[in-house]
Amino acid sequence: MADNTIDPKFFNQVAQIAHTAATFSLAYIALTKFGWKAFIAVAISEVAYAAWHEFIRDPAKENPATRGSDLEDFSFLCLGPVLAALVYWI
View 1 (cartoon, rainbow, N blue to C red):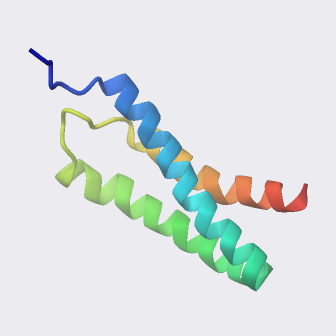
View 2 (cartoon, one colour; view 1 turned 30 degrees about the vertical axis):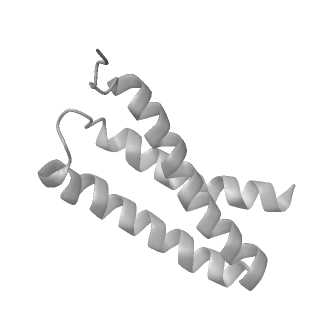
């Protein structure tokens, strides 16, 4: 019989990759297709959304079984646009 529980450590690793990949993708597309002004607008929007989502919404709505650190999630969401700018410059 299969154990249907979620391993919180593995779930957290997958979530952090997804957080970074999502914000990286949006920021990189904005930068490569529309330039630096669009990138800045998207990056600011992503950071504002990340702050609201992680510090206001998640404490009230997220599943306690998979809930991780809000600060860690926020950091990985903010990492996406930083990586997008670095990849673009390289």
